[in-house]
Image (cartoon, rainbow, N blue to C red; front, top):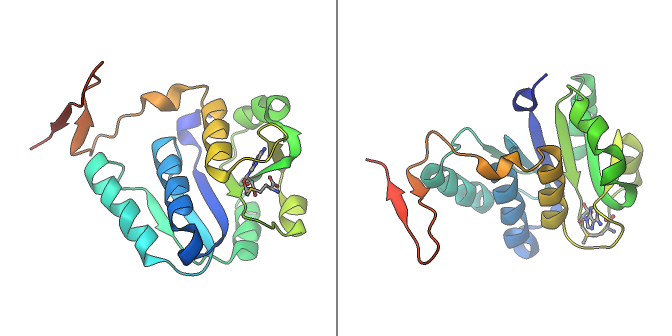
Length: 182
Ligand code: SAM
């Protein structure tokens, strides 16, 4: 199976609209830009996150990208396994990414990538097929997700272009150049 045939969904646990709006939006932007097809969040419903990410997709492309808030995480982990997908939980307590990334890349299974919050239930560690550490120092969900997806796609995801983009950047050594499609 080619990497383009994986379904990659990012699940952010325990989203709290008041405190996590920026962080969860950044997780969604990272997921969209670097190869996932959906962001799911557990915790409280948050129409604002959905709206913000839909606006980005409408301008910069990838309108197929989905955002679903208030997902029941236990049910989702169970369903993903039943549908023969694998679960990758990013945590500093896991195995170093360098040890497991080739095996994960070679696997044809679709990937649910779980990132936590302050306290991740032990059941997530137990249910995950892989608990993966992006180094063993604490940093953040966005950093962990970015580096994991970069390693998974071996840097190719930095060259993604979306066919449905209304705006496209024309790379420039100085200043900003953006092309708008009619
Ligand atoms: N105690 C956490 C842990 O298990 O990695 C760090 C808490 S951090 C505020 C929130 C989330 O960022 C974690 O649940 C994890 O998904 C991600 N994270 C932070 N540092 C990480 C690391 N070194 N490797 C993988 N994920 C990390």
